[in-house]
Structure formats: C-alpha cells, structure tokens
Length: 576
Image (cartoon, rainbow, N blue to C red):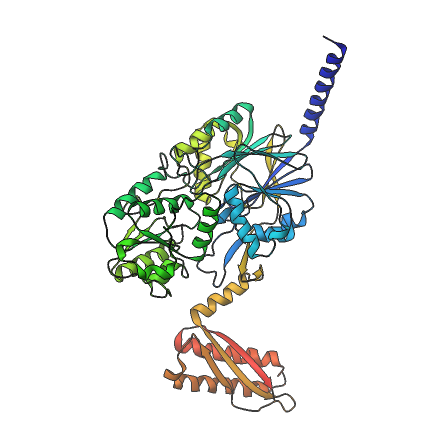
C-alpha cells in the first residue's frame, strides 16, 4: 500500500467521523401543517440545519356549514414567516388534496417544485389560472430519480400505485437519518398505467436503515388487500354490453386510470365519448397531451353534439360523483344543465365512494336520478369503484419491508391514525416510538431519539373567490344565521339636529317571511320599531348606536315571542 493510499483512507475516515459528529448535533424537525385528523389539506415541513423541505401542498373541500366557501387551504404562516429557509416543494401525486394549495404558497414563497410529469402538468394549469406560471420553477422528475434540495436534504422518488398515474413515495435523506413517506398508495400488481409499486426499493431502504416511516392511513380499517383497478374495467365492460341506453359515468376528474377504462369500454362497444364538467375537461386535456390517456382518433365528441347520436352510441363522462351542488351530474339530474338532461331509460354509473360527510348529497342525487326514471349503478351494488389506498395487509407489507425505528401515521381522520398506530404496535414497533401527531406538532429527531418539542401555527384558511383567510368564524356564523333565519332591515329617517323622525320607519325582509302574505305582521313590526325609536329619541341617551341597539332588541323580542325565530336584524339610520 502506498503512502498516498494511506493518506486517502485517513482523510476519508476523518471526514466520516466529522460527519458523524455533525449528525449528532443536527436535529430534524417534522412539522405536519395539514392532513392529520382530517381528509385533505396534506402538507408537511421537514426542517434541518436552517433549511426547510415541504412535502405536498393540498386543499380540502368545504364542509356543509361553510356557506359560500370555495375551498379550504392549510395555514402556511410558518412557511411564509420562514420563507428564506424553504428550499423546495416535492409532490407525491396530482390529486387536489396534495396540490390544490400550491399556488397560494408560491405567491409568497417562490421556490422550486419537484413532481412527476402528470403532477407538474396539473400544477401548471393551477399556476396559469393564478397568473404565476411564468415565474414558477417546476422540475419534472420520475420514479428512481434523486433531487438534492439544499445542503442537508436529498429526496429519492419511489414508484407507488394509486388512483392516479405517476404517484410516488419518497425517501427523504438527511444527516440525521432517512424518513420514508409512502404518499397515497396501494399494491396493484396489474395497474392500468406503468408498473407495480417498487416494493424492492422499499425493502432495500429498510436494509440500509430507516429512521421513520410516514404511511397512508386512509384504509387501515379495511382488512385484506385493495382490489386492482382492472376489476372496475371488467365491470364497465359487462355494463356497457348489457344496455342500449345512454351511459353516464361520474367519477373523480383526477382518476385518469378510471377515465381510461371508460374510454376503452366505450371504444370496444362502438360508442362515442363526451365530457362534461370543467375539471374533467381540463384533466383529460392534460393527461392526453402528456400521453397518460390513450384516446383513439374519432372517439371524443363535444358535449354540444350528443343530440346528433342515438342513445346506444353515447357515453358521457361527468363530474359530480360526490353530489356537489354545482357539478355536472347534479345539474343534469335536477334539469339545470344547459346541454344535457338525464331522463327515463338512461344508465348512470357512479364510479366512486362517497367521501365521509358527502353521503347525504350523493344520496339526494341518486334519489333524483331514480325520480327521473334513470337506472343508477353505484359501489354499493356492484364493483364500479375500487379504492386507491392500501388496506391493512398492504400497510403491514410496507411496514415489514421498511422496518422503521419510528412510525408516524398520516393521511387520515383521528380514528384512522389511531388504528394505524395500533397496527404498527402489532408489527413490533414499540409504543414509545409511535407518534400520533396533530397539525402543527413539531416532532424532533436526533440520531438517537425522537420527541414532540412544541407546536407551530396551523389550521384552516377559507378561500372565498379572491379572498384568502378573510372569511372566519364570525363571518361563517353570520352566513349560517342568514341561511337559517333570514334578515330584517329596518331603515329609519331621523333629523340629526332636531332628533325627530323625518318619516315612518321602513321594514324590509329577505329569507324570513314573504312580505305580501304577511302584511299584518309587517305593520306590527313597523309599530314596534316606531315605539322603540320614539322612546329612545325623547331620552337623553340618543346617540346612533343606542338607537340601533334599542330598536334591534325591541323588534327581536317581539319576533321571537310571535314566531320563535331569530332573524338577523340590521338597523340603518339615515340623517335627513
């Protein structure tokens, strides 16, 4: 051995020892800002050595009581306040609950975004709508690639199966250790697009040593394995062959593999395909342009042309599988669609399961379709939908391959996270090494330990039109009040100098009673307002606020005694 070789070995060992010492000093923080104890809004920050990596940036759909709200996004204050530390965003796949908020983040924190081709294609559309595509830094990656993000973090992208093509899990490598994030996944040996999940790579990472595993919890309550997406295609084929009616298929717009199977069944049965629903049109356009959808020439027709074809020649793919009030399927069912109406003899296939909380709206649409005389097929009747998420046995396989020291269940409601934590304990992970976190929790890792060390600001921001965060609990409470009880506006003309009424008060109602059918009540309300107003004007304390308060109380008490309703009362004073 030469002296130079000895020196090289010495310097390599010295550098290795130095890196070990640095690794012991560094701390890795895992900070979920959304996606825990809820479905949607998935976003997690990893922080080490003054650098932050963001995994996913999703949104959630508004709940029933969020009147007028378009969507819900995570509170990203922590990232905005630390924007100089944020080095990049990595995306697991192109579903809305993983990419829906990215434009809102990039407005304030313009950093590189890494995602697969389909995910980036869908993100481009969003950034274009927000007018920031020209300044965004999108980087396309594929399974097997590794991206170096900052000095301390590199991310390896691992192929997984899901209900959208090009989904990936991640190995997030840091000096403290490797964190494996499954993303949304299932084990599908016969996927529609691409290859099956790369179980071998998960196993290799497990052999190398994994600090922590973050795993999809959505289907942890279901035993066994999730069925392959191809089983739905077989069902479509049977249904399409068995009818000469018009066929409507409602599914998630982002489920590109499902759309491909509808198109395949339509082509084999010599049917043309039309598409309804803005999001469905957009995603089909992106997916076909990028090659994720294979559509034979002459298959697609504009929705305007469906009347030119006989029923047995048509398939219409539509949004609205969750019963959304403004979706294409709902408008067709309730005769509110400008181009298509579902009627007697039509076959409607709802190829999705209701998201928790949407069961009632889906049921309403199904009932209306039956009233119209349509035949409805949904997942409770036959296999027209399979989940994109792993069941218990698949979750155990991943856990067994990765062999993590610590485990963090993600992507699920409280009951899902709890059941997944219990499953991890069954798999031999010590209870003290399993962390069921809340949004905003800071889980801090060193090379030898893990513990929750605090919290950062996290929560919901409501998006209403162009407004972000300006609709809060008080505004929602007022909207709920208006929706349930209506409003009464009391207009009072008062001379500010003489403090006398210049005209009789006017009472206007909306959503409370129909004024023409309740003239007696309207006159009595005017009388109550007049008395309260006169009593206040002759008193010493007659400022505008006192007048409004007294009129509101007097009228509110009268209305509640007579109707047991509490409409919103809005007094307005005009100085004339």
